[in-house]
Image 1 (cartoon, rainbow over the protein chains, first blue to last red):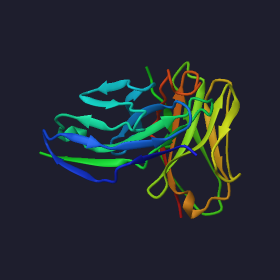
Image 2: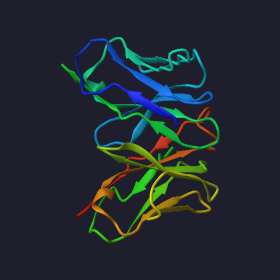
Image 3: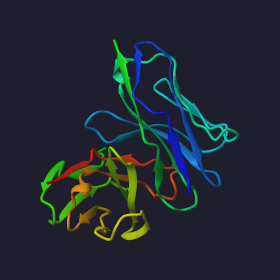
Image 4: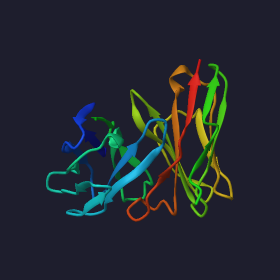
Length: 113
Length: 116
């Protein structure tokens, strides 16, 4: 079945460091790909998405490119802030009418001042 | 506009009891999905409703059920609670739910259920 694999956390960085969180997926067809973020005590917020190969999603300085050849959707940010500390989830949507997300296990990011 | 509202935010129940959780989607959204979040299993899909019809169901026992009302509000019910049902239950709403290619899902803050 379809699945999403994320790098294990926690990831601890100093403020202004470069961030990469790896995400790879297994899917038939052409899924849409998403990054969601969860702050402590909150639900999930959509960070960015890409709906077809080579699309780049971007928001709040975060970027991710849909790479079909490597089945990847890595999240990057050039300069992290303390306020970016949260759990990040990579997810795919099977565009075949199953009306659900398949999530990765989440990666906790801690940014130190 | 108002976001997705889940009530209650916190619940403590005893093993064997049943519980009902409520989700009010964003106005105009007709698709409501439910997910269970636990430290061990992560986020797992429970079911999705659209216009009062369940369109998809995850791999959970029959103790987990749900429904959607004509105003798109949804409830999920868990009967005969087990300790392992302790989790954060998240509800998500979207406009049509026709895959999420063009319409994102908006999540509520969740209901944290503790079974003792």
